[in-house]
Amino acid sequence: MDDPPRNLEFDAYFPDEWGAPYLTPPKVGIHLNRFTRIFLKPTSGTVPQEITYPEAIQRKIDPGNSEIVSELVSESYRTDLLNPLDPANQSLRPPQFPPLRFPAADIAKQASGRKSTYYVYITSVLPASVRAGAKLPQPVEVVLWFGVGTEMNRHGLRTFFEHLTVPTAFVQIPGIEAKASDSFGRQWAIGITSEQIQELLNATFRGVLPPPLPSPAASGVQPISFKIKAIYAFSTGHLGFGLTVRNQLIPLTDIQRAVMVDCLYSDGGTTQAALDMIRAATKGAVKIVTYVASGDGTPGAYTGQLAVNVPDRGVSWLTRNTAVAYQTLTHARVLNSGFEDQILTWSSIAPSFQPKLRALFAALPARGTVISDAAVYAFAHGSAPPNGAVLLAEWFAKIPAEVRSAFWQALWNDNGNYPALVRLIWANQLPGWSNDADPTRRIPDKPTALNAGYHDFLPFEFAWECL
Image (cartoon, rainbow, N blue to C red):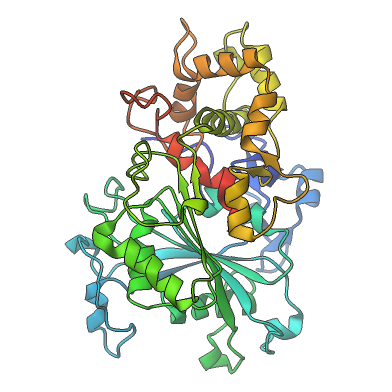
């Protein structure tokens, strides 16, 4: 399969994260992510020179021109770490990880002892004295995201952290899917320890990316203090979330919100045990929020019988009354990004439908403003949605009925020589990957559960709600 048109680590998937545009084929119209830094080859000396986006645009620097661009560097620190849940790493000498009561199962033999890629993004520039080794005036608030591994860039999640005024670190812990090329047909948990979080923070806050400075033990600087504010699980990340908590690899007492992003599986009781441990550690203060968007992601999504006991007030049901609104918003969002980046052309859209599709695109609210459920938001935050927020159901109701109906019909149905819009999404890998299944498939008695988008598109729209 060909690579997606947009790079999973460096390119923007939504216009609100646009940086410098690519100027030559095959990426004309696509933009570098504004969270990616550009370093030009030196005109004199040996050190690559960073260039700002305004200057790159003014000088018409093409990020894809390898003759003048030395490297592209994500603002997210990236490093490979050993999986603390891998039983093979228990035999390391000297020991690197705490003993495991509940080790990860089903790790392919070929992957035993393998490192995985972790990312961390910080939200504010610290004083030079802190980067040089001085003590941070307050603990860094850490948000842990147990997911697949590409969400930070592919789902545009860093944008959601920009408004935070407290120094915050967004740590992405990878997962492994059975269908991934490096999984050998298996799926297993990947976790993180307090020591690894400390290592990531020391490197990110002290370092000039790239590379990080030496560890505190080697350089004598003060370690970065932190507390875990929120913990998210998405997709296959539910495995790492459950076992990291259940094996007591991280501190739990400061967690304000635990968020299950369409991945509420029982896992043989592990998920329930993990959530109960967080409840106990926080003396019941934690808010447990559950997003239900698909039957594949959340068993019981259409029956109402969830596999894990979670607070009813914290469940956002995107498979019920707002199902069509949710899928309209998210699929339109992905399609709009494809047109904005010139991956899609209007010649693929029936002329009679084009005005309605343009009208829907024009009505799309800004990312990070849509509330899936006002009651769930109030449960998570103890307050009403902020000024400027848009309720999903209310946004959808304001779209003219003929536009809503035409979009829904065109989304799932071919029209002569014009393919269903959902085919355009997956054939062009607009989400950064290709759905192998028929994207127009319909599940009997579940008319709103139509394709992989109902699961995968959730983070880029609603991950911000619980920050």
